[in-house]
Amino acid sequence: MSMTDEENPAQAVAAKGVRGALARYRVLAYVVGVGLLALVAAMVAKYAFDNATPVAVVGPAHGFLYAVYLLTAFDLALKARWSVKGTLLVLVAGMIPFVSFVVERRVTRTTQAGQKL
Image 1 (cartoon, rainbow, N blue to C red):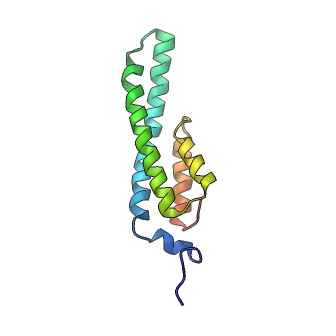
Image 2: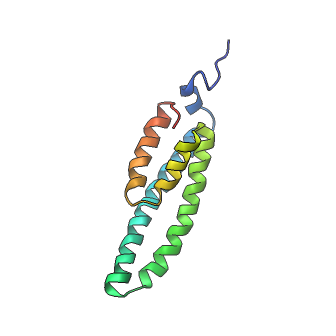
Image 3: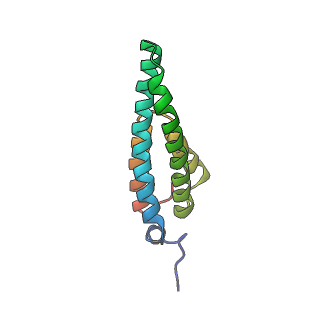
């Protein structure tokens, strides 16, 4: 008798592509988290010191990287078979300072344990 991924979630983690998708997601979660903090600092420079240059540089870079983060998180969600709610929460995590770091740890633990988010 063969078990399906539904019956044995730990087997799903070992499925082709989940490990690679998780690694890509982890890198992008950190990059987007740092980029968002840089964007917050750039906005402080803009409004507190009337210097719009940092926002003009960091803003588009963060926007592009956030789009890549969305793609990698969605890829992992499909491969690890996350729920819609879990997927949406992870996608939104890249928009709130510091949250992407916290969510990345939870996603990593959950996915490596073979559990669904």
